[in-house]
Length: 82
Image (cartoon, rainbow, N blue to C red; front, side, top):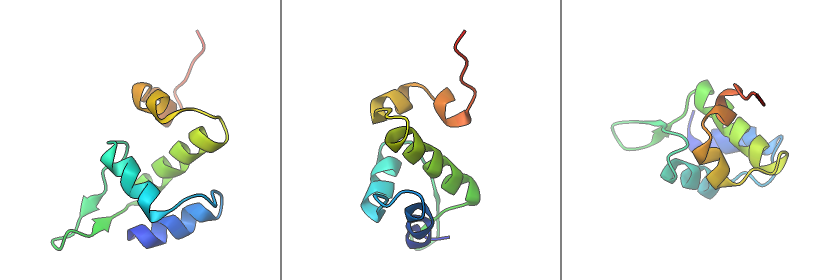
């Protein structure tokens, strides 16, 4: 799916989702969508789930982008408080 389709899906749960925000998260290295020969981003369902998790961490759990980048386990859900 393309970036517009991804944002449309994300907006269902996160009205603040935007194309520029997805591009920013890519620039920050949190997602790495594949590219077509023409350079268009091609997102998989795995990418969409990861973006959903990032937005959940930011908007519902109030994690900063820096905290998310520094704690990759947050994105996999393998967090333990031990």
